[in-house]
Image (cartoon, rainbow, N blue to C red; front, side, top):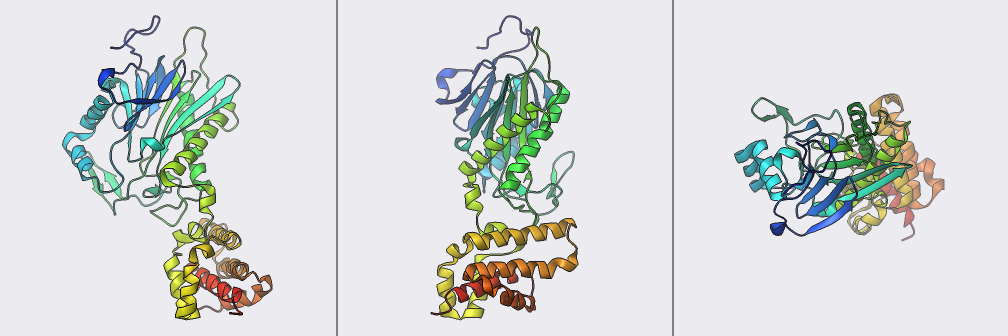
Length: 404
């Protein structure tokens, strides 16, 4: 049963769930006079208590709408090898899957916008930010380890009228989904601008964690399947609609604050990503080909089997040593600056040797050996990033225990 409140458009229905007797047990994440947000099994369901204007990326019924009662996010599949989900999408199509999911969630398919992801709804993170009379509420699910991309990366799919053709290999699963609720009316133009602010905040969260793209060697700005629904109440009697949201406006400030917080918390819960856990030479340089295995290969060649085995038994401590990690991120910054054209290519070898020599001296805990390490690194015939880094770590480790 759905209720109509006096003064609302007669065609508008507030968010009342159907058949509550048979619904799964709900966990209420948030409730106010505008919206309630519940977790129901594999679903997050936001039910409006007053009419809202919604802009969303929903495949069915997306775009700008003013007739929605529900905004839903749900786990539609597992991240890897979910053949049953793929079969369901082929059999029912987008419209059919939308209807099936809404019916399972107990919401009206015609009045719902639906986000789909492989992320676990148990890992959803809710954040709120307030400034004077303004409040922004964000609930996010986020997974990036299998599908992180950078804007402009090579794309694996091309949409035709009937299907998507594969251009390259299919990326793995991973999606960042935001459900965003503003507590004051906003014009359509204001909501459109809010979308860009939401995107900037999400991208900032990924860049701060130095998440690598899986389709290039650059830093990721999102995933290939990111989605959102951004909502604001429609104006009632005497209400005015906000027109401004941006980096110079308090509404933009708290929107980005809430999106950033929800994104980073969800990434921690879904993927175990946190700033302190990114303190690693591999986190800094894996996107350029540096691996623990190739460090072991260089160690065996440079130190011999016995000493190499000793070094690699302590490999994880080595790659998490804070001072060498600082040098690793400096190496990554040089490479990014070269790619962007900030540094010219003639500076490459010397700049990389400089930072890798600092890395080697830091591992050895012997800063006086910097010049020697630098000369040796510049004499390498293979000055690729993996080889420079591996030699710096191995030589530094050997000097640290030179008296053994």
